[in-house]
Length: 149
Length: 108
Image (cartoon, rainbow over all chains, first blue to last red; front, side, top):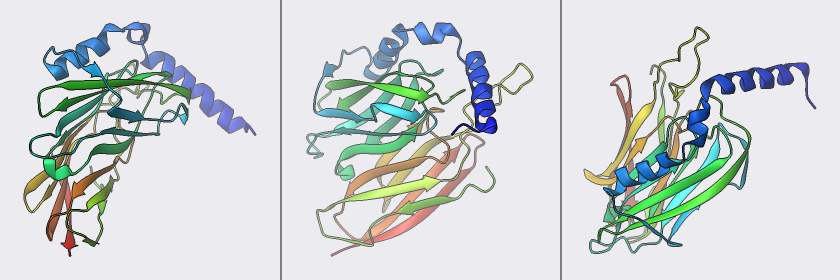
């Protein structure tokens, strides 16, 4: 049930969010393309099911959203994943996390917990040792945003 | 940040060639730099911006963390166990301090 305190806290959070998110940020679709280009040096990544970006479809708490990003790869000297990055479409800042792997990593996968200011898409891009880039996007619905992420 | 406590969990033993999971956590508020301070400005950013794991000096993973990472950052990842050795985990704070912890894994 909603106690008076939780309702007040919710309302306060909402006010904070309005201040923290200029509408320009919400609508800026080009920034994802810019971030991807920064990561790939301009190369266009190929959408690939080898890359998986796991998040709950519905995140109840935008402050703590579990996320795992992985690439199917043998992780040998000849054939491995060098880097994976995750980019947010409409957090105040686009960057989320970037991991650099080595063949010793054994598996190109990392799990963490992230903040999402609102419902949006997330993009993962991976750089392979042969110089190719893979990408994947997922949509997440956020019930209560991680205000001022 | 005073009071940041790094923790890592690795298997004590592994078979040669086994891919083992490593879980790490550090207490840190991960102040994003985006929250209003109530005086028209923003609370300054103060986060863990980088994490590294090495095994006997060899890099396993090197992670750049952004303000979108939740407070008390948790990271889990993998390594292929080839020999007995020691992990060194290091967290880098915006304020210039570093925190580290080690763990030994025996490969049979």
